[in-house]
Amino acid sequence: MTGVSRRRSDLISLAGVPIAIGVVLLAQALDGGSARSLWQPTAALIVFGGTFGAVLVSFSVQAVVGTMAAVVDAFRGQIDAEPIVQRLVGYAIASRRSGVVALEVEIDRTSDEFLRNALMLVSDGTTPKITRQILDIENHSRRAVAEVPADVLETAAGYTPTLGILGAVLGLIRVMQNLGDPSKLGTGIAVAFVATVYGVGAANLVLLPLATKLRGRARDEALHREIVIEGMVALQEGLNPRLIEQQLRSFASPSSPEPSVRRAA
Picture (cartoon, helix red, strand yellow):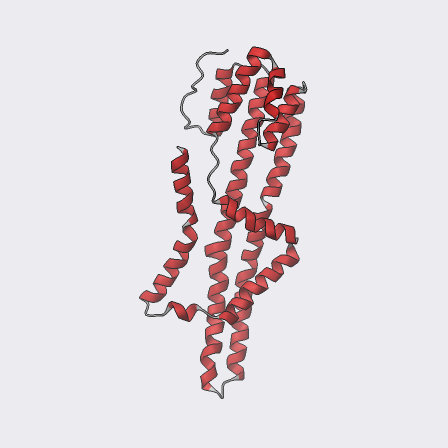
């Protein structure tokens, strides 16, 4: 898949949330209702304000702020394994010609911190076993950090339906308190039902889908780092660049095209 098609599919993914919400509003309109009737500031304050406070109790401020940044970053484009495969094959060819010392100049040329650490281990003469152990630990640690935003969103998705029920109860209490004043019954009933809609809708149309998106992003990033690990270890073991490329392409995607390196340097 080309970079253009990947960006296009990601834009479609970005449109998923408004599409889901739009379908609900359309169903409301088709049933003769008004979208404006779903706007209840009191219900929104109970559900979203309460959820935000509960999330702040559950996680640090840094984790909450990081979640917002992670959501934005998740839609900036999918991760393509092709560039890193080609770079690692180039490293293997250079190493085969001039030894691993030739990789030292590449350390300052890459902005990928994980790849830079891998290059430093290889150029320092670390054994393949130790290289794999160190990079595996770092990979697992980075993935755990990358999945924190998904944990935040999933936790929030657990709070919103409950707070929607709380809003419904509060609305019904208001109804019961104003049984003698019919003019106030409609507002209380609206808060009761709309709060439930906000809670269930926010959890299932926004928070859980975004959490799934972030976990997928973390998984793709971890796979990207695993490709680096496999490539650098294979390089240290002296495998033929053509075999390294074939291995990495199979590791990244079984449907990838045939290796383009036909002759080892």
